[in-house]
Amino acid sequence: MWIRRSLLAAAGTAYALLPLTAAMGAPVPVPGAPEPAVPDAVYPLVAYADPDLGGASQAFGAGVYDADLGGLSAVGGDAVSSLRVAEGYRVLACDRTAAQSVDAVDGLGSCRYFDAGWYDRVGGNLDDSISLLTVVAAKESGRGVTVYGEPSLTGGALRLGPGRYEAAAGDLDRLDAVRSLSVADGHQAVLCDSDRSTATASGNPGLCQVFGPGEHPTVGAGLDGAVSLVAVGGPAVTAAVGAALGGAAQTFGSGVHQAAAGDLVQVGNDAISSLHVAAGHRVLVCADDQVAPAVLGACTLLGSGVHELAGTGLDDGISLLAVSAGPATGQVLTAYADGGLSGSSGAFGAGMFAAGDLGGVGNDAISSLRLADGARAVLCEDAKPGAVGACRLFTAGDHGTVGKPLNDQTSLIFVAA
Image 1: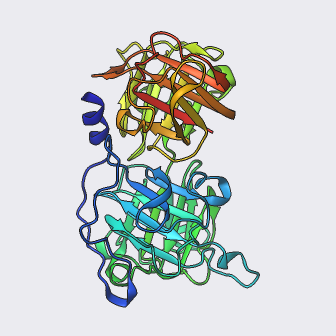
Image 2: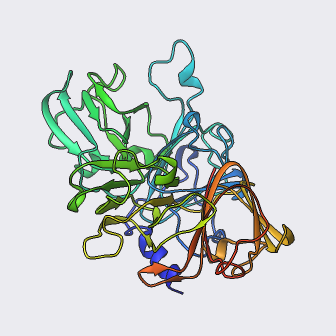
């Protein structure tokens, strides 16, 4: 079906990676492990609360996810025990607990660096201790982070878009050292003193620190002149009023963002002309946002990359954006096969659920639903090339019917907690 092909294409271009080895106790991919049930897309990262890819789970696209900021809401902070990393991506997993002690100087505790593969345990003293996940693909153009060769944002400069930059790959050769940096709004950077030349042998990238938006006149005493890895995470979606991401712009994370709720203040309602979708993310853009529950106007599902809307019906017509990397477990939405909240059911956390992810309730089977307090969801008919079918927006509460034309026709769900 078309949605399968489109989401697979959106997952990102494959990138050659060096495999982890078993040296020095490094975590290794599970030999012969079956592929987890992610039938409609290759998600960049799926994190699991239990060993052997079990328990609560959450899919992630490229970016930096901090448990303290709600970034690990489905799987939980200090709860991750196993991982699945897709081809073309690397993951830096860190514990912040040690770094929060009074005498901490590095900003992060223990970290591990994971290549593509399946890991039945994260290892490295990180089981049930991960509170920061950085998911990076190959380099993208952009100016999310600028690193400088001298303190106080002086000396030679190197502008970096989202992705991974490693000394071993020559990515930092233009600078003799990294001693300060600036981070643009919507971006974060994690700097470490080891890259794949040593981390793939041990899984340990050494001393690491995370930097949020703003100017950082020093990288800290431990990293000064010793940075070998820069991992840059950007926003899931950037929307702009002009072509080629020009003019006023606004960034969006995972969730359902609607003009009627005041979520498009910076870019404006019916004003978007171009979008950038980060690697591994998807965005459903829709017209005619109304007070929920309501049938939406025309909707289109977009994968990673830059999208120009000129000449389409959505140019200067977007009122709602639903953003996600993929599914997560939880009970934010409970869907029922029969009206009046009856019949077989399935529970869903925040995220995107395609036809193969609809679990116990099934594809083309939903008739009613319940949404938790503060939640929003968009349900859509079968996807078609270049667009999806009819979509409807729902807010918190019980909905005894999903209405026509979605009754027994829902194949795509976006859920926001």
